[in-house]
Length: 144
Image (cartoon, rainbow, N blue to C red; front, side):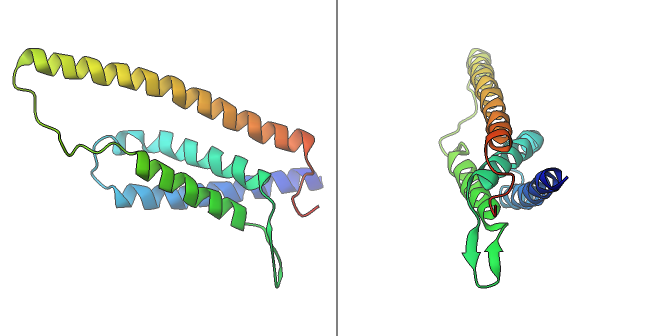
């Protein structure tokens, strides 16, 4: 039963940290093109990355014992900074001049979306595998 308790605490910690950082990022980029439509995907990615990273890193020893939640927060900060840095900027954006240019732009965006979609799902599956491997092979708690 102790192993299940550790998994539940890890899951709840990752859920809280991911929710906090996803909300922080969505507020920081409020109204940014593309972010509002992908907020669920962003949350799923941040949640799984925080969960996988948090359980693979060891907790930080402190004066009052181990800071169990610190690895989750550290990974959350790194993931959010990475997402913010990789967010496309549209500084040089200019509207299409004619219909052919608009169709070409739409086609390019669709191709980019397809490539991103494949990368996203491969990344999500990889993170899920990382979580499963940690719980199957490692100690149930990093405090162990």
